[in-house]
Length: 224
Image (cartoon, rainbow, N blue to C red):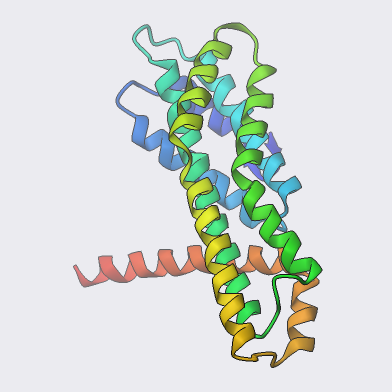
């Protein structure tokens, strides 16, 4: 079953058959699947919630079905959370790249779309936690306890997504103030038109980032 761009059956199967030694593989697979799903839609908070909910439910269902007697369910869920965090970190980076383009063209932080984009960045970590928590609450059986432990630990530690989002907002604010002092206001009409479709633009940036990573990895392998 494909939902929100996620092959739920494949993810459930992966978690249900995972061994205790496959933690990093689970994290990577969840990260890749989440990132691919995010790339397939406009990067709005609503779409992010949809993807995170689907991944959480699929990973949880698979972990619940794992028959291995020595399997650490909490560790599996921690790796699922880490994979989603890694994907959202890329989404934050895509937002940063897009926002820097607008600032360079003179868009100020007080403009409605810019304010909304920065506000959504600041909400990214809270949205992440709230969505996983809500999805986990709907789980039956023995998964509620492990998810509570995972979320409690991550809230104390903080996510890479939240840290980078906070830094990005601060950086954009500084850059916008500098641009304003320099009187930069070129291409404002074009920039405004781009801002009107901001979520779609960020999604395109996110896709381009991943393609760049893939090509860079292929080039490295070819030189070996």
